[in-house]
Length: 132
Image (cartoon, rainbow, N blue to C red; front, side, top):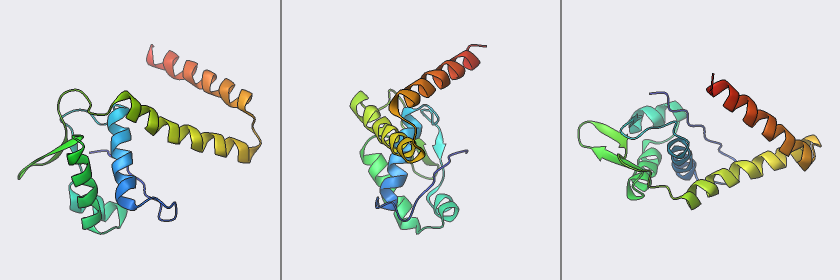
């Protein structure tokens, strides 16, 4: 399992929601596939150095949303079938990342046209690499 979840204690978002949002992003981006197991509650709690109840709450939210399913005695897995994340939810997840990018660009003194140009360049690089 190569699930990479990072929490930030001081960003104002409850830790369980940070986990929920990151798992949703991993599923929406295809980095977690249908049927793939996510880390057991205790293992993720140890990795993040948080209370297992916090991870359990996040997993319950994900299960309620249809993102994951629990298999008794076997673990927690990404739900099979089409992603339950709607296009609107995917755009919402991406919007948060775009906001962070724009704030960071502003702090670095990089204007919007340069950010757009950089995005275009990176898009070409990524898609050229994946087509080879």
